[in-house]
Length: 551
Image (cartoon, rainbow, N blue to C red; front, side):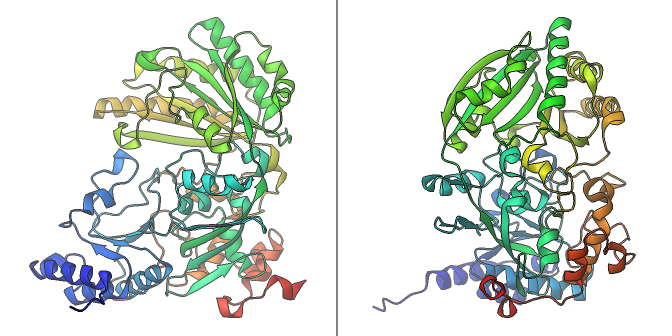
């Protein structure tokens, strides 16, 4: 008996045999021939998955139930960078024949606008690129776009090393980093994209490129905040690591149920904005504020979820004025690894939090609306009280309790200049978002009305910018909200690295018709180093300039 065999070859033959029973129309509906599907399958370590395959529904599922009925024509599952290159060559060839050929990459599937899935097109799934390699001596970690936060944090912890990243354990690096990446440690170390030292991408023509401070610097600038599906498919991210072995965590709570308690909560929020947000550059403290109801409409409550570096005296000294305020309750204190304290603060730990929240998944949450705004101007106690009272009113107007989340800036976030990279929101005191939910058309209308009122309360104090990691498809001025005066820079970089606009969707750079309206001269004063980089050709890996040769 011949003992030499190839498991992948056996799997491919089995899949092709199953395809032989399908009519040609099943393939041509996807704008692909049977032979093209066979050739692509032989060329990759991944696979093409069609709607008739058992794994199709689990693979097409994304995080938000809003998009549960979107059905891609096929899913290209990638396991390696070689797979990504093969699929990108295929996609480019398809678009040359049919410019309307639709496709979209997905990693975590958490796009609030549904830009991680596509009706009747190809979903390019890069979750299989999930390797993690730590170099503790160099204080670097190299990860694939499919790495989830739980594995990201766990990989570096044994070495006492850390890079700031997102809060939700299910979020993956690919989409999160390219939009910014906020977490409890962002005030301590910066946004996730700020810790990036190098990226590897596959361009539309299938060529791999590496971008860092020395090579393709313009692309390196753009990928860190320019969002995904814009310039290439991310296949590797390298991060600089910082020392961090243990942190402390504290949960503070203010009840907001009565008018007197609401006044106390508004005063606390005013204090936090004045002393612990944009203008506060103490890197020892990170936190998140949440205004929400408990089960059965209990509350609502203001939760201040605090994480800090140092011993217990650090947070008590820094937040002494806050914990001395009427109504402040210290729910618990704890110490441990960053990941364990992140989970405890967010209720992801094994034990329930003080509000009795049950662990859930986004798939079990009703359809939702999320809006985000950055705030630069002080709200004052009166406007904060309006915000608090608006959340309190939900019990009489909405079917499901909303949730307001405040992501404080300051610290390392604001120490970097606006334009340091394409995450440009460096002057704000905080970003905040509101989630509202519904189950029926009537409830949806009420949820949107509630959202509109919330935006109206904050409008005088907001700079009008929005966090690009929480996109909304109906923003008429989305480019201004996400990137403000730096949008022309991104348009020029887009033209250089994706000249045929293969990476194209409703809010892709240039989708608003501005792609050809900028020149390098227009941005020379705004970002002179990027303007110089734009004048250079794309540098391929074999042409790269090494750090040692520059020193």
